[in-house]
Figure 1 (spheres, rainbow, N blue to C red):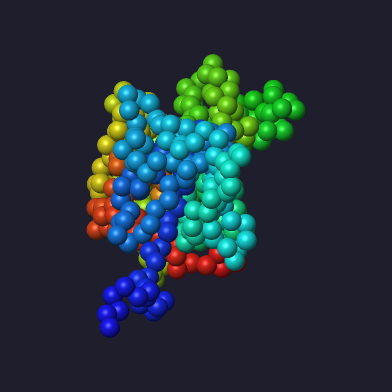
Figure 2 (cartoon, rainbow, N blue to C red; figure 1 turned 90 degrees about the horizontal axis):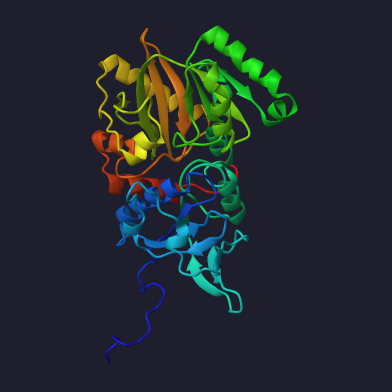
Length: 386
C-alpha cells in the first residue's frame, strides 16, 4: 500500500524554520532611519533559512503589522519613510507575549477576534534612540523570554546615555575627551548657573564646543557652537530631543570608526574606517550621513600599529559596557597620535551606506552573512541573567 498520502509522523515532518520578527520605526526622532535600516536587513535575510515577520512601531507607539516591502523603506527625495505608510491597518495592533512559556504573537483589531500570528523565535530590533535602543524594548523581551539581536538591558541603556557611557569608559581606563553634563533639573531650576557652568568649561577648553542631546543618535540635535552667541540656540536644539544634554570640547584630529561583532569564540573587531571631512558640511551631521551619503574610507589609512590599537580599544569598549552581538565604536585620532573614544552605538545603522556593514564587508563578512551571524548569536543566547 502506498504511504504517499498518509499523515507524516513528527519525526518525518521537516523542521520549522526559525521565525525572525524584525521590529522597526519607534517613538524616537530616529524613526525614519530605523526604517531605512530595517529595509536593508529585510532584503538581506535568507528567506530559505528564516521566516520573517515585519513589525512596525508608529511614532505614537502603536505596534502594527506592515507590508514586507523593503523597497518602500528608503529615503526618497531627501525624506525618510514612516511606519504609518506601511501599516496594514490604521487600527489593528500587534501584541507580544508576556509569558516566557508562550512566544506566540497576536494581532488584534477593534471588534474582531484576536488572530494568532504564530511563535517568534528571535527579535531583530532595528530601533534607534529612546524607546527601543536604550534597554526599554530589551527589558520587554527579557520579560517575554524571547531572544533578541544585540545588547541586553544594561549595555543598551549605557550605550544610549552618553554621560554614563563615558563614566563607564573612564572607570575601565579608556581615554575620553573633556565634557560637561547639564541635567534636566539643573537647567530647569537655575538656567543662569547651568549656563555659567558651560561658559566656565569653554574658558578652560576653548571654543568651538559641541552641544548634544545625551540620549539621541544619528547626529540628531547636535550643534557645533563657535562662540557664546550661538550657545542658547544650540541648547534649545538639543533639548528638543532630550532634556539632558552634554557639552563636549572639540578634539582636533581624524574620525575613526571600528565595528565589533560577536563570534562563537567571542567579540572581534573589523578593519577600521575613517570619516574624512565632508565638503559643504561643518562636521559629520545627520544630512552628511544619510541624505548626502558622505563616503567613508574603508579601510582607514592607518599604520599597522594604529589599526591594531583601535581594534583593541573597540573590543575593550564592547566588554567594558557588557555589550553583546554588535557595536560600532567611534574614536578620534588626535594630533598627538592618541586614540580617544567618542562613543559606542549598540545598534548601529544597517543602511546600504552605513559604516558598520561596510567595515565588516572589508573584513571578509558580507552583508547577508553579517545579518545571519547576528541572528545566530541571538539564538545561541538565553534570556535572563547571563
